[in-house]
Image (cartoon, rainbow, N blue to C red; front, side):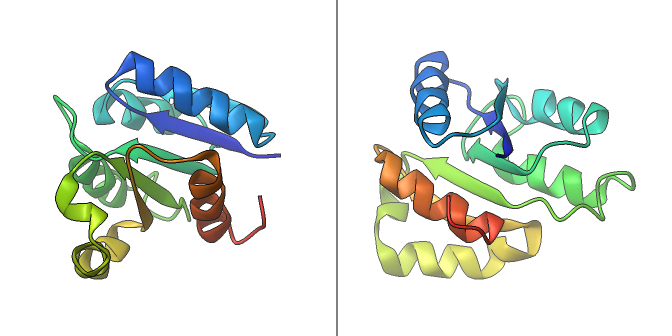
Length: 134
């Protein structure tokens, strides 16, 4: 179906989200531990359909990763939907999340899902980002 790039600094969360994505019948889940690793993967692979990225990571967080994708001439033109996953309690509030999304959309971010989340929440965000019912 789709190839997803999963960017998450916690190996435990990567394993959980990977299983959720495979349960949604994704073709492949490519994993990176931070934004810099993800950027390097995107430079080498043209088959990534969407990115699910943690917001807060070191040394390159999700926002810095999205900004780097937009600035990279090779990657800039790709229509690559990004879904942020975060444990930030402020973003669990719908009004706060909506305000953040207003500025995040220009970086290709299509949705923010707060941890912990269900497979159905992930499915809804992917469907929104891919424009296809997952």
